Image (cartoon, rainbow, N blue to C red):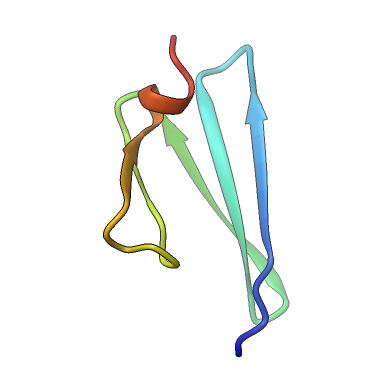
Length: 56
């Protein structure tokens, strides 16, 4: 089983969500903005729009 660490950061004043994934001891940040599709490497068949979870 691989070591998994995720961190979710959001800023309510800016419609942006940054998902951080720990890769080789360093967090890789992936920002998403309204209209972007959020893809999960854990659940590749699951696709959400940021608008679905953070309406404008």
